[in-house]
Length: 114
Image (cartoon, rainbow, N blue to C red; front, side, top):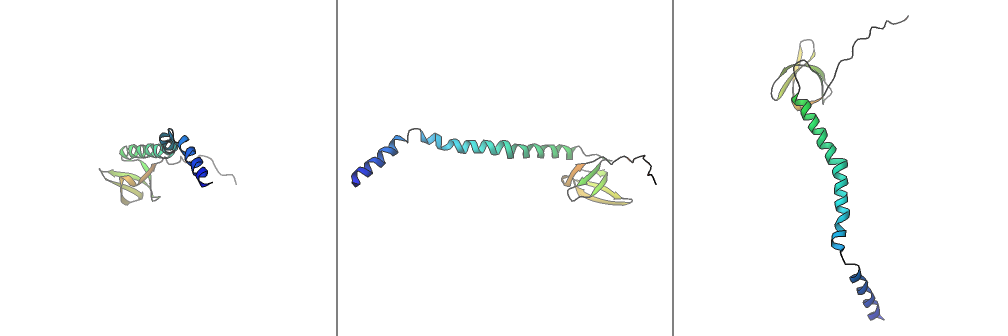
């Protein structure tokens, strides 16, 4: 009885092993492809856009730092920006800490009704 069980178990394993080496890697290849297109590629594009924005900073731009400080650029060097955050108040920040450039909202000409 044991001989039949062992014989049936070995015969089934040999029949399913044809080409299973490549098919075992197909799910891994598909997972890598999904991770690349959903995670890696968008992050690379975002990093490239941020680097282009940081390289294009110039005097007079209004920026927001990654720490949330709003200011206007008064001086630009290779690594450091000088921001004016209030009248006669200037701080120095690293270029890479600039999160975004923004446009100040235009003052509205609407009059309040009493």
